[in-house]
Image (cartoon, rainbow, N blue to C red; front, side):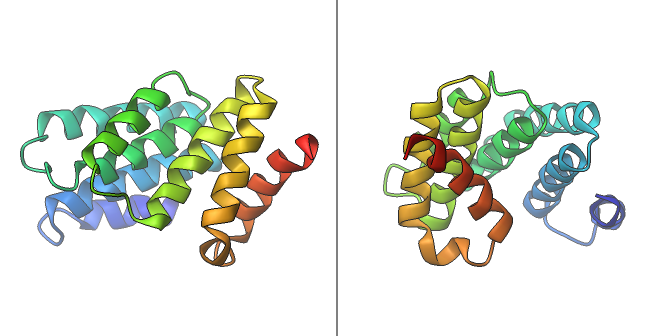
Length: 155
């Protein structure tokens, strides 16, 4: 989280606006993962406001930012807005979301369903993520482990 905060301080004038907003969303996620959930959620909400303000500027890649914000919100423990963010991201990629991003969306959805007490739904989404992202998840062992933990109880 500290490294991302430092990178964010250096970003203005050195990166594209899109990259800067993605960096903010990544920082929000890392803050939440580091135990600073309230701060991560505040940043995620700010990023979402910025994405909405700049929706025309980010039109073709806005879906990525929506997934980034959904991830930060999920990690912050705020799953209420997540389904709408995921639905919008999916609708913006009607031609097909890349597999890696589909896995991210399924992970977010599975973890939010688990938090809501929907073990069967969480297990189904986690299993789908593990199935379509088997190769990709080898590079993200902690994510793979989180997903496997959701599938195990239903097996």
